[in-house]
Structures are given as structure tokens and as C-alpha cells.
Image (tube, rainbow, N blue to C red; front, side, top):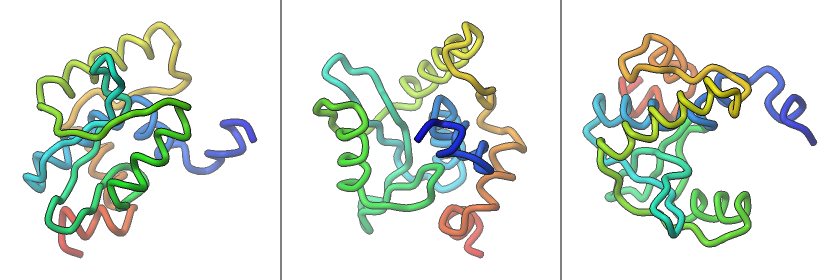
Length: 139
């Protein structure tokens, strides 16, 4: 299955899972005060960012909520190497936003990466995902 088939009709999800995850994690952190976590490789590169509720073991990203174990399993399978989940600083995640935007400008990402954690685009997307909507607005 190619990317067109996998994300057909779900391009916003694709954007927030491929480069835009950093923006989404910063936005969710600002709204919920949940800590930001990252999926790191052994060179300390963050492959994915999300917010994590340590009390409930729920990780939140563009797909909604999942457990940290499922998140780690997904990325270990996708990358074919051992990645670890650990807390991320806002500064590290912001740096990865800049790197993702630079990669997009060099056409390494096929789609536009939301460039601001205050973007109405982020809020609009979050409002469409039930578990994210409940997390942010309790609705």
C-alpha cells in the first residue's frame, strides 16, 4: 500500500504524523500542560513527538490516544530499529519543527507542515479527533 492509498481522505492526519507532530505536541502541551515526550533514536533525534499523561498511560498524537507501549511498538516496527520513548524539552521539539520545515522546503516531505503551534489549523484538526477534543476541551 502506498501513501496515497494509506492516507486517502486523511491528509491532515498525514501532515500531523509526518513533520507536523512537533507542532501538534507543542500545541497540546500548551493547552493541557501534559508533558511532551519523544520517540528517540540512539543519536537523540526525535522521530515523533506527542503529549503523555503519566497517570493514565495515555499518549496523544494525530491519531488520538494510545498507550506508550503501542506508540513505541509502532515506531520500532516502522523504523526496523530500537527506538526509545522519553521526555522531550520544548526547545528540542521546537528545533525539530525548524528541521521539519527546512526538510519540507527541500521537498523531503511531500506536504505542507503547519508552522505555528498557535495555528488555527491545529485547533481545527484537534476538534475533529474525539479523544483529542475531550483532552483539550472536555467535550
